[in-house]
Amino acid sequence: MSSTANDKALSFPYVDGLAHGVVRYQRCAACNAAQRLARFACTACGSRDVRWHDASGRGTVFAVSRVHRAPTEAFKALAPYDLVLVDLAEGARVMGHASAGLAIGDAVRAEVFRVADHDLLRFAPDR
Image (cartoon, rainbow, N blue to C red; front, side, top):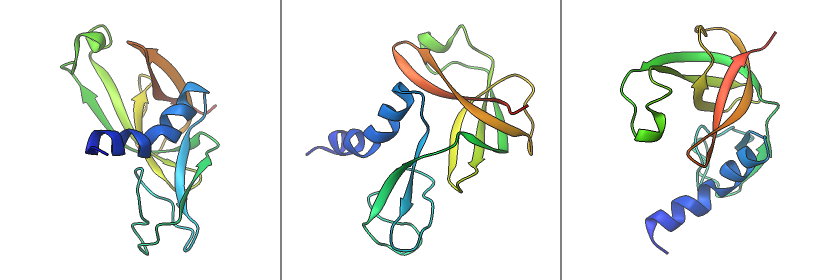
């Protein structure tokens, strides 16, 4: 299997979750550590028993970055836009788009939106 095929197989549960409006993350069955990216093995203990879970979609903004140059034509209409790192309530950290005006420490909730036939994660204030 090619590395691209491995990457797609590894991330499929996450991408499939977004298609169904659900944020998914991995947690180690051995030590209970939440993983920050899709992994073949736990970053805390090395166990290969990492399992996918549905997240509540709620979290706290850890970092914010503004993107001024769109990476592709499909994103030009969005630029400039903000990306955020969010610490989910379950402990995993994920990256997503952000509603305007989010700041570090803000409580947020996840949404899914489509750009160029791709479901993407976006965070909005949790009010």
